[in-house]
Image (tube, rainbow, N blue to C red; front, top):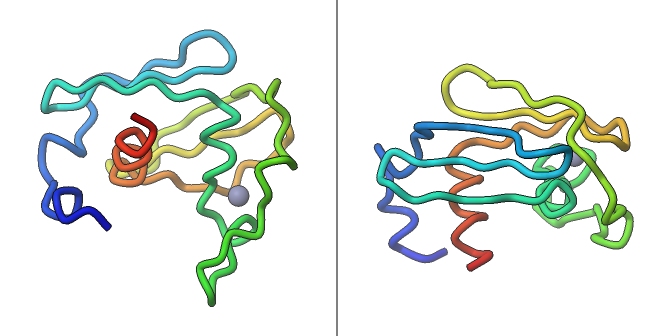
Length: 110
Ligand SMILES: [Zn+2]
């Protein structure tokens, strides 16, 4: 992992604004001023739940091709003060996306 990311805490992993844009996008403005935009299929493909990632080996069992490019967000909720959880249009809803994961995913995309 990039050591920059491991060092990062505080404002960089605290969302200032979380907004769903249309049916298939999410925008997060972070405390350090960075803005990230996510598409529903891309987020669904990195779902960290036990159905999508083998808990013991950490290997991703979910294949990207199993997720439709037309996937949409049916619902998004805060989990405490550290994460988001989504209900996707494929009925999957067990993933807890910590803000740290969302921030790291955003930086890997660019
Ligand atoms: Zn999952």
